Image (cartoon, rainbow, N blue to C red; front, side, top):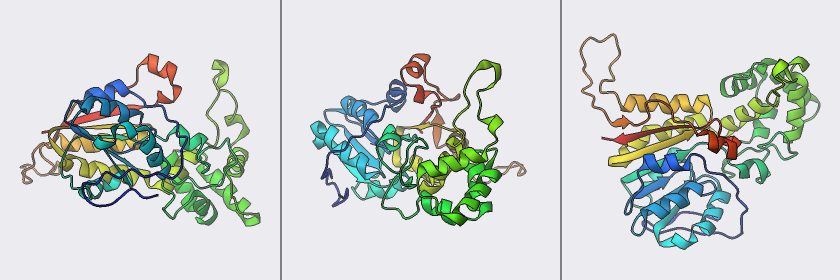
Length: 335
């Protein structure tokens, strides 16, 4: 299954039905900040389950367009089915959103009215992909969003040095016990390769001190599963997630028409830190180092930040969808 072709051709092609479940978060806020109206062209860089895409389409019709991008072929197969009623207004592309400029150029689009990036992992990846994203399942240790890429979690876990594993767990997962976990992995793989998500989760659980696995004191609140941060760190490393976010943010302003909107949903501090940094840079006139007394860059503000404080989901949404709890929305408008 391929999503590509001649310029200006709408590509929607699928061989099999895909069960793809994902609950879109902060939909009302996304639509508000994107300022979706009839006739606009909006790019959804991370289609996922198409929850946001459908609502965007319904607001840009009858003559607006949705450009849907996703690196997961299963997501695109699902999108073909659920977006079929609006086929004439939809173009789908397979690729990572870090390549947004090239993907739009391939279909002859140089500027759009809005760009959405939802950086969260979908329920489908956890529950139905079979790629080892969940520590509660016994699946091959893959963790690729795009199965056409080469690097898998299996490769990292079984080939990287102890120091490199420690660095990944510490930097990408902010894991306190990164050293103990990395050492346990290296010792285990000397005996037998680590091939499944459950095997890895068991190794992590044994490496973390028992006192850190119990409920959190008198409050009775349970701590997160010991493998949570390790699995997140490996997923980030396998899919180059942080690099992709930075590469995407660097390109986004040039692709927006004046007045166009950029909206980004992130789900952990590492992603949000990158998004926040870029948006502050877009909204700053001078990029000269602070030690230079006179501006020499001639810089101008590229965008106006619309969310001076990060926008968070309302309590009612969190009650309906607990996975929305960590969502952070930031938006900006092209000058």
